[in-house]
Image (cartoon, rainbow, N blue to C red; front, side, top):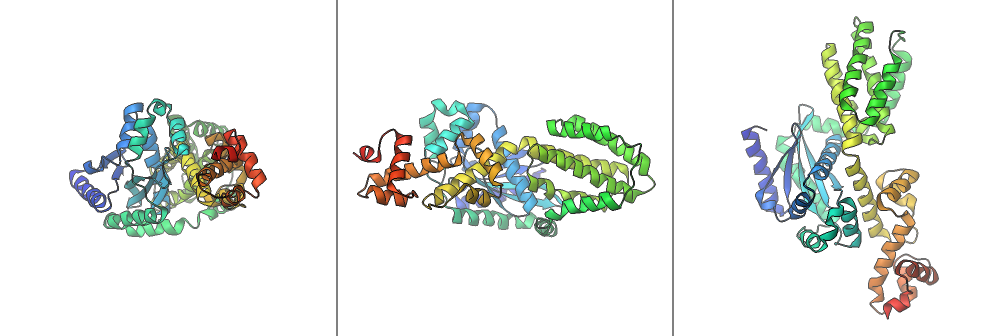
Length: 413
């Protein structure tokens, strides 16, 4: 970023920080440059402790990038959990159709500090295991912000930065976010109606490209991609319309490969606007190659760079939903999966992989933790069971003893 741009960005950061007492940073996309306000140091002290312990910032950078890319896709603020369970929100700055940089507000806490948060921070970074007291101290400096205020803080940052936005591009992204589901149908129509097969086209190169994309090998993926573009240009150079269509086919191929190894489906489909916008202006093979190479890099980025941050965001959103609804007797695995937009089977698998607990085991743990607070008062066991979401006292007592090792009555004494 140039000097005048830096000054403008720092002015926004300072205004936001001093008016809200919430930390704010700006992340430049070209060199992943981070600008922050010096007065943000208190609420960022946990992040500084993390960096001092691990001697690296990769987790935070991946998390920033994940939030920024989601905000870019939506064209609006995106609220997310970092891999350590803290809330951030990202706001994109779009100029001439591309995100030059983005702002990040936070971190904040959306729930009080509890054992789950501490356990998962340690799981994410075992070096915290011997620094529990210091960890709690730094976490206590992070402001607690309820979900409603969080949404307003995210919107406020968006409005403050509005003067730096390419509004037309931003509004177009918001519209396109609703029509991504038609992308696969478009590719299908192109394949069936608009080109003839070429026997000189090396299908084995496509298979090699898929393999390299799936392994996250950016360098080799680019090399093979350019080879394929060369074949396409050689066979269709006199018909640039067909050349563009074959390029769209390659994009679909890359998308399938990325999705198969876990890339965010919405991010992948959300990238279609990049191709269509570029193709309307492209006049030679070099521009086509540059366009498709950028998309290739984004697919690999979505799969291998931000996947961990994405998974943690999903899990913490699920955990937050469970904590807010555990008292409901009918809250099911399907309810939580629907809330965060995943299939029940995939969510169940991801939840177990990330937490080491099944959904029902975690739900019971939350309910038992809540019941212990009620056991300190004069509620009957039957009433406590009802309040924390168990269908009857007998089952509540059984689960309590399984988790705590003693009955709720003895624990109360």
